[in-house]
Amino acid sequence: MRIHQIRLTNFRNFSDAVVTFGERRNLILGRNAQGKTNLLEAIHILGVGRSHRERREANLVKFGETFYRIEGVFFDKSVRNVIEVAYSEQRKRIRINAKEARPVDLIGFAGVVISSPEDIALVKGAPGVRRLFLDVAISQIRREYLRSLQRYVRVLDQRNKLLKQAQLSGQMPSDISVWNTKLVEIGAAIVRLRLEYLEEIEKDVESNFQKISRTRGKVGLIYKPKGYDVDSDVDSLEAVESLMADALTSLLEAEVRRGYTLIGPHVDDFCFKVDGRDLRLFGSEGEQRTAVLAIRCAEAQEMKAKRGAPIVLLDDVFAELDDERSRALTALISEFDQIILTSSRGVSLGDEAARIIEISDGRIVRNG
Image (cartoon, rainbow, N blue to C red; front, side, top):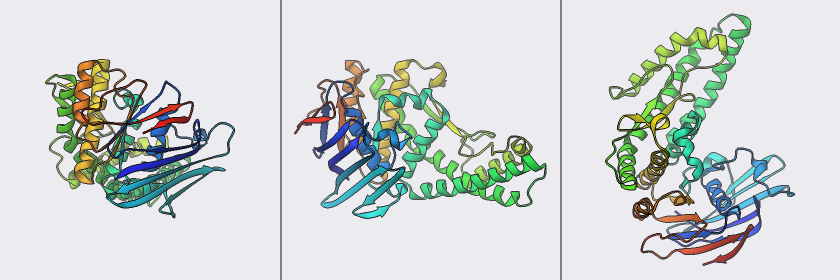
């Protein structure tokens, strides 16, 4: 699916703006703080229902206004689809082709992958950043993963309530075993799909890393569950369930003392390794940024292979790359379908001509 047009009303620094995109290559130009990233953010919201950099919806509303509205026109071959996301008075409203929808209905509908400077947190940041990456990436290509996440959140909330009761009363609720079983069943399915996804993209991440960095570094994506270990021998759902169940049993007293669940996919992590080195601890800034670009490109490659080519959003990704790495990245992204790239200066997107979109202070001054 491709995005054809977007209209922004009171979104960030845009009052009322309409942008039409080319089917293949799009270059958004403008000085810093003019609204280039805001435009990509709006497309990302249409794709997955949330901003990639702001959790509070109210902060997306233009200063002095009371609402925002984003409307996007997409084409899947010749089929026209319209997505609308609006927010006002603490309420978010989503429509797909004029029908009311939920945020989860957007995930995987259009298919988007975004790479931005904030992505450095995928290597250097907290585990929650990497969990969110996995959740969004896998949910866009596997609907059953998204359903499992929704079920897991409900089960986790109920189990935490029981643990809190046990903490306050000193007595274990009789039905805790029921919720243990549900947590293990759903949680293990999530972990297994995460393991499969990391295994599937690892070769592409390594290949992309080597192409961009011009090195022969061996790259590994290592899943790190909390409270138990998994390795290459864990090749079945039943094996993960067994490990999780044992960990729950051993940590139950500690969970009661704290009043919440200590293990499961909600606390797990993964790390990047190059030649056996954890990049978060022992990687250079250049290696870390290269790893981030490599995994985002692999995310797009996997999505293209599993569900169709995504819309690839690249926010100023060439800014901190030298000429050699810029040329390597340009060659790498040439395989993608529709690209929307921001930059403060002209950049080459290979042999294909790009549609130029210029932004100044929240206004579109050139489109085409």
